[in-house]
Length: 350
Image (tube, rainbow, N blue to C red; front, side, top):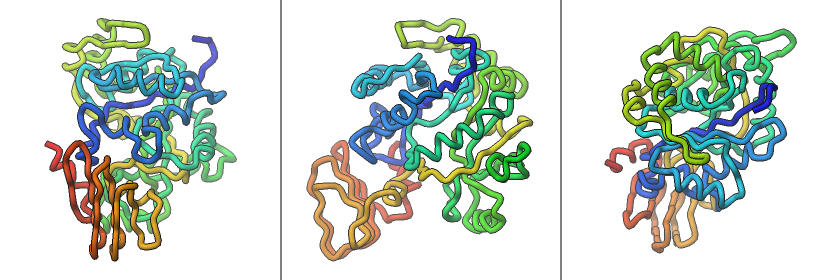
């Protein structure tokens, strides 16, 4: 590692993707599937940062069972990672990011992002990172507020305050508070103020600042993760933290453990065509629609049907005189629900 601070992409790939059942499965969850293009969302995330002049090779934090899958998808696109850190068990984002921070040099600036999000306007994304970088380098913890386009109840929100620095206008603002997923009336009231953005779960934080915050706010978590790191096994680019020590950590998110408690938090509001692809409804929203508002894959036949979403891994699907359905065929299973009920699909995955 050089003496100059650099941006280290930290790609979090530990999610299980239960809301995209039956296609997303524990052995191959949604981030490794080609849901929005010929490439998987993990590969699209890699491509977003690979070869970028301002970014170092990424650090990937993944489920311990997915090491071979990560390597295969890296190799398929000619990408390389600094490290593939394999979590022995799921402990949410706060411990996962701590593992990456322990790998990084103290003054490395981590660009923390999930592996399973879609960003259509990558130019806007990189511009927002550049705007946040001076503040992150100086020790502020930075996040990105997604410009909302409706009173969405499936996302957390960020209330934005005054400009964080001089001459920045509205480009970089202070975070007043993070709020949990609201009901639709509350979400609408947020949008009416013009001060709220969606919390997209993307952060720019210096490694030593993150670890110091974890020591302050969750010392037991820090100790468990640090012990797991000290006892790690290394096999080439693969790093396996100690299972027993890591399992002793509490399971919690960076939002709750760090961002909601720390001072010097900034946000860059950005419109970049973002989606967390958190449900089949979200895939419908970003999909290419035909004249009747359907989003369908090859292998589907629709007659007098509108507003439907059809995803199939090979079985021919036919819909006649029905509207606003989600029909998914995958892994030998068929799932049908109404559009708008996609957040409930995870109830079927157990």
